[in-house]
Amino acid sequence: MILPEPIQNLITALSRLPGVGPKTASRLAFYLLRAPEDISRDLAEALHALKTSTGYCQTCFNITTAGRVECEICTSAERSGSLLCVVEEPLDVLALERTTGFQGRYHVLHGVLSPIEGVGPDDLKVRELIERIRAGGVEEVVLATNPSLEGDATAMYLQQQIHPLGVRVTRLARGLPMGGDLEYADPNTLLRALTGRQEMD
Ligand SMILES: [Zn+2]
Image (cartoon, rainbow, N blue to C red; front, side):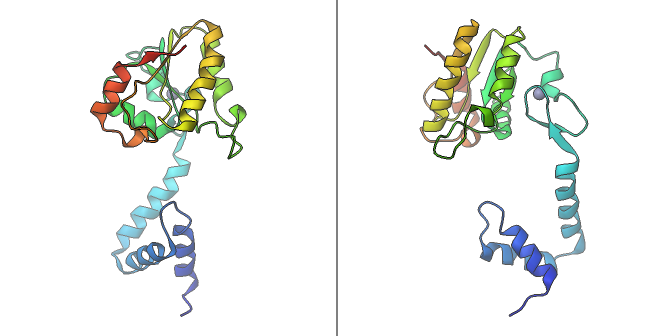
């Protein structure tokens, strides 16, 4: 069966999303075709606003509203600038914020070191992190990369870079499942890992 082009285009676009195969993409496309118009209009508007109305904080690289130079966490007077938590992705900030147990600020790397996939320090926000620490005011850096091989290797690398700057470097406590993702950890486990963080040496 040859599908009209608009439907085929939607199926192709949807199947590029992670976790969506051609079958799911077809099911979603036909659902939208039959559903009331406001469902597809809301989706289209939300998708459009996703890129046009968001940007990255120029200090911590977390997602923020477009037009803002710094995010709400970086500009909040209630958050301590002396405690800096380094995470892989913006979703990890969300996971840590859900614990409500962290009062410092964040730095989002946007990935982890992965020699296999050709990801080096220059592909991450590492230089920006070091500059931030060099600028002063940071007393402790909590390395909260995921408890995976790459996450651990990235933490080790960062520790070596940060240690000479005379700043305390800690790592989330064990207890998070190895190979797991901060993003999916339950807030209590994550809070325990955060409060039980250990010195890296
Ligand atoms: Zn920020």
